[in-house]
Picture 1 (cartoon, helix red, strand yellow):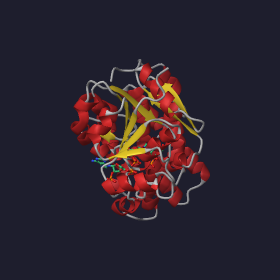
Picture 2 (cartoon, helix red, strand yellow; picture 1 turned 120 degrees about the vertical axis):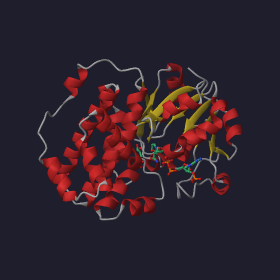
Picture 3 (tube, rainbow, N blue to C red; picture 1 turned 30 degrees about the vertical axis):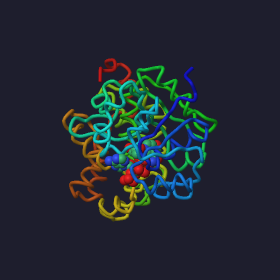
Picture 4 (tube, rainbow, N blue to C red; picture 1 turned 90 degrees about the horizontal axis):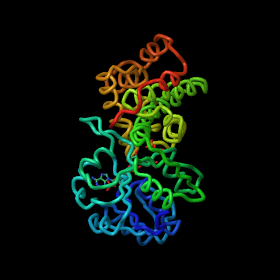
Length: 347
Ligand SMILES: NC(=O)C1=CN([C@@H]2O[C@H](COP(=O)(O)OP(=O)(O)OC[C@H]3O[C@@H](n4cnc5c(N)ncnc54)[C@H](OP(=O)(O)O)[C@@H]3O)[C@@H](O)[C@H]2O)C=CC1
Ligand SMILES: O=C(CO)COP(=O)(O)O
């Protein structure tokens, strides 16, 4: 067991970073939240609320806040990263050397292009002396901030790091399960955002419950097919970071990706939907990145291709749906085929 009072920091003061840091503060952990906005930091320190990203949620008075990233990292043993993928590398480039020897956990659900890199792979590049893990699961920030029960997955080849995260983050409201499939867990968190956009669109169009169930189930088959091709363990997609996160993000209007899809379904442009959200919806960039990679790798992903055609190729919705419904009818469950495929690739 690790020291439960290990110093922890969370980099990124958006909805998820604030929520994670607050959950740990509520458990009496020594935790500091770093964010770049001085006004928001002052508000959290004095009013115990993040007015920009979690208005109306009372934060624990023991939560420490800083705008000094170097001092925050220097004082921490365990560093959580909750920076959107578009800014992830630039922040890592700034602080990479300071992360040497630290335990670093990425919570960011996006993919960097070019290179099709997961965020933990960026950590490996920019902070090669750090120990790396990823955290992912059905974790809508606002529900967690409200104390709703859920679970998440900490994935790393480093068992001590998984144990450390279970110690500091696990609580009566949050179960933290371990996995060794870092790549699969991270890929699951990024891919499901694309299908949440499709689900939001289906809801806006008034589609039936059967339709939504079909979409989620075929989404799971499609994302697993891609992930296995890329070297992930198919069983990971039966867990919290796979089907668990897919279900919540495809079903909840709290999901920002779902909301972007809903706006599209109501006839708004992508730009309008994203602007009204005012928060990050990682699925938009992931859609572009994933479509390109699936084409390069020759992986069959009709839902991804269909959404891409609607959003970026101006194809009429009705035409795309017609094409999807008249595609070749293949196998339902592909997991048996996945199980007999070659072992997980070195990533
Ligand atoms: N919210 C959720 O329910 C969950 C989110 N995640 C993932 O966590 C990641 C972060 O998302 P989330 O917190 O929700 O995003 P939000 O949109 O709520 O907040 C984004 C945060 O990132 C900060 N930021 C943006 N660019 C930079 C930068 N260059 N340097 C420092 N800080 C920066 C913003 O600061 P500023 O306000 O100053 O611009 C803001 O604090 C995403 O990848 C998301 O997929 C994972 C699980 C759940
Ligand atoms: O990843 C999430 C829930 O697990 C949050 O999803 P959104 O980014 O779509 O809000």
